[in-house]
Amino acid sequence: MDSFELNKIIAAVLLVALLVIGIGKLSNIIFHVEKPKTPGYAINVEKAVATSTQPSSGETEEKIDIAALMATGDLAIGEKVFKKCAACHSIAKGGKNNIGPALYNVVGRKIGSISDYKYSKALTAYGKEWSFEELNGYLIKPAKWIKGTKMAFAGLRKEKDRASVILYLNQNSDNPLPLP
Image 1: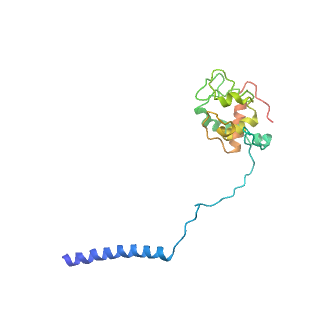
Image 2: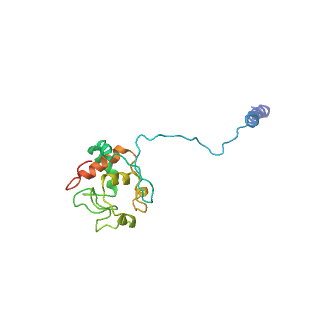
Image 3: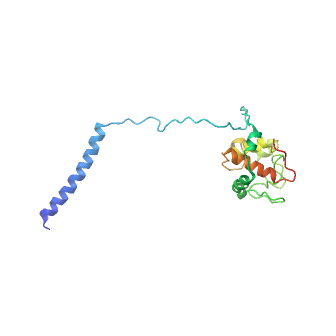
């Protein structure tokens, strides 16, 4: 191949590159699009069942039907979902405290009452018992339900999962509480 042929090939490649860049610039000038001030779309989502949030700072509390919620629970699912909790909590009778306190006999127990576990100040000052309603609210998002808690768990969003875990916790007790 002589230099003339090589020059023609290089010129053709450069011409195509110049054409592509030029057409891109020209199309930007012809079809100018203004960008929105706030990117994204507003999506309105309806909740199927309203859940409760703790009125720890004077907010109003939404009431939920805890009996209907507990009816959706399943012990087998609760045992499966509890495996997320087992990384920090033990559920065995006489189990030791890990990162979190032992949860055997937790339903009906006063919040922050295990003597050999160092709770956050928020939990020790809370002054309530772990009822079905309290556990449900806490398991939605612990840091939001009791502000100042050390528990860094994201929470259980699915109502069936929360109800199942509460059933499982209630079952792992010397005296399980009657369901509402």
